[in-house]
Image (cartoon, rainbow, N blue to C red; front, side, top):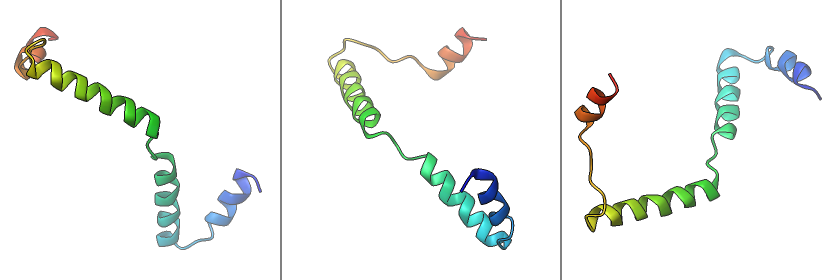
Length: 69
């Protein structure tokens, strides 16, 4: 079954059922990549440790905004 056939069938659904189908399809696209999540978790730990050890400093949000105006 191709996407056009699926669409034709889906258009026969009630609006609430179409919305549910859209939500299910959207959720299927938004599944996090576990490898990327692991890498970001490790990176955030490294950055937090560097901050705690004084190797890096934070920059105020307003300073960043001013810098890129």
